Length: 120
Picture 1 (tube, rainbow, N blue to C red):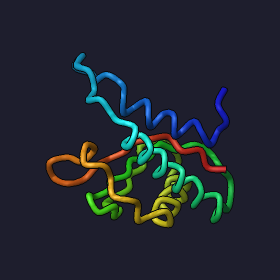
Picture 2 (cartoon, helix red, strand yellow):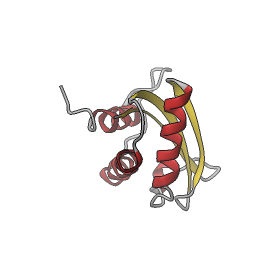
Picture 3 (tube, one colour):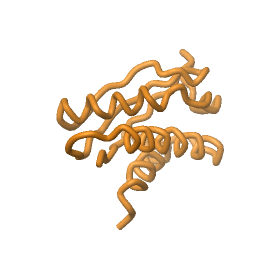
Picture 4 (cartoon, rainbow, N blue to C red):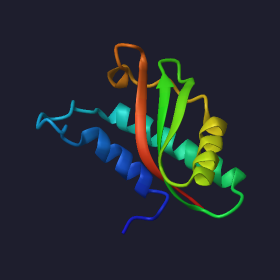
């Protein structure tokens, strides 16, 4: 089993390389994009560890980041509201992020990541 801080990173990276539901292969994600995702998830985890208060647990969040690295939105996908608020504070503390690689941007100029996060 992977150490708990590594699990969200691995899941986020797997989500980027998983086949799409329609049966088509996901776009190939290069090492630079993988490193950027790893950095984003790591920054959020570190921000939570610095400010951690209260009980921990697992949540799944969706984070929108624009082409400049600015935080464009946070949504709780799974977990309690209290942990979702804690995760949102960690994301806000970790922002701004480095600009995402161009290959991860939508035509509208942002990227979204959805990943589980274990708060301690």
